[in-house]
Length: 289
Image (cartoon, rainbow, N blue to C red; front, side, top):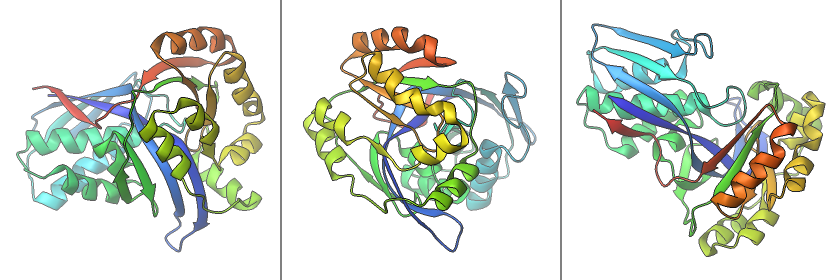
């Protein structure tokens, strides 16, 4: 079985106070995009995971895909095994939820392979126990996110969106970015209404003006070279630009595919990696059985 694991991006990310659980309250708009990892599943006596390229991410029990497999087995009583083979394409530690995407793919694929029969909503609930972005990566599409990531509401996206995903050569720890955010303080929880309404109306200029990420100052404090990312994407012709999640990946909004490829070509010299990606209406999905 082959499962696609799409990355997520944040069009809007407002961060509130840290809860007693250690997680921050957020108000966000997330979107699944076509930059994706590839997870292959085969029946096996036990659970195991291999990763390509080797060492790209941990291959043991600490991997979120393995944790998701264990969580699904615990939730359903499944006793079957599986050999998981993960091909990493989503940049690691970049704010694109690659680990959460892999966990979502494991849940969707193993639910089918093991005959668990859980609905997508039930898989989202299992995913929320594994990581804060996993539930969204199961659902995909475009959604408003509240709480610590567990409250999801679908949002209308009138037009397919095209993004230039630009990744510097360095990585950032999500925990360290949030810790620096706490040190710096923030503006408080904002309302993503402008982004949601622009998406529903297909108004790219209004959407570009409404993009927001409260973690940008914290990420730039840890990685000073990020300070020119927005300017580089805008100079390359992007309509708007914003950091995704805890970074360091940035996204430039384009008007269509042709424009996205033009922006990517112009911005390539400023970043270690540049990808063109389209918005998706789904999350993790089975491609072949």
